[in-house]
Image (cartoon, rainbow, N blue to C red; front, top):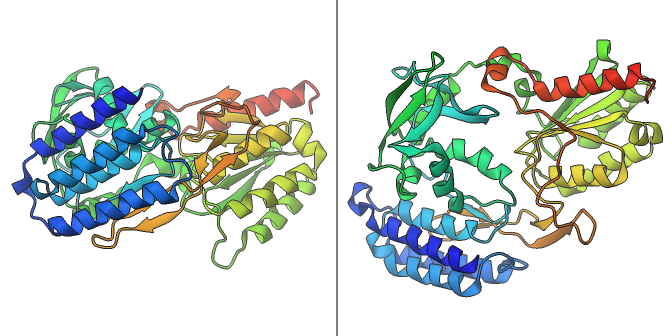
Length: 426
């Protein structure tokens, strides 16, 4: 494994060095980048609790040295992406470096998602109307499966669910595709797509700067407005009663207080409502929750544990997804250990026992920001080596489900709940 990592790192750096450095003017000097690289190396050495739990120490040091030597010949993006690759090699989802928001990348005008039946472009800008709703088969002749493999070394992850989440986002970035050796040109790609009629066709996309991409994206209206779990995913937390199902649907999207509504006050209202419905089930949806304040995990778990009928009698469900991470994954692990929760959807992108604790840092010269893992969190048993928490009710939407506004995960939960009530349980 260590030899394979070293070979992958060498190939990645060779790709970076081969790119056309003149295509993007440098914003920072070589010395500024080298100073930031020295700081990044120190962050990895000192701040990470165990930087070599996955990466080989000699290979990691060699990657830093090689990038340091090549900096004068590289563009700003190439250097930032090289640093990004080194952080991904540490092998945990909390250690990363981002170049977003620094005008270092460009974007193709589409959105994409990996569904149960393939990776689809969910919408695309004017001029690419045929592409919206088409399935991706290849990029510049590289089959999609190989695209995923070439992008994987650049993804900070705890398990493969993060690949499912990140690859559709990376497909929008032409410089990323070029750095990974997928496309021939820096700012252009030819996508081979499969239309709804079953016929394949070629669609050429060209990159846009972030401001233009953001303007386009903010103007989109999508089927998401028809799906309950997508409509309010930008709110930290909310709930509604599904009266006909004798259930409360609680979507928890971020671990923090909302302005004017502390989380614990929200929980007071939620559980007062639940207590007034003694036979109702609670459906906790954390499939969009990537974490936040760890201190908010216990208040929710303890409220559930203080209600034995809820915790032990099959009245508790949790829907997880590929974005369930960090504090949200800790919550799921504690529910799995201490309650009778039934898990639905798909596994989250974290491990029960893993390196984590979002600890931010900022590089002094370029201002690029990142995170480094500073703690080891044990939420499972001491010998729990799982790289994910599996679900009992697997339900991943197809593209047709998305277009129709269906939510297979919630449907699976409600079907299970109806069957339980009909059989006299709980």
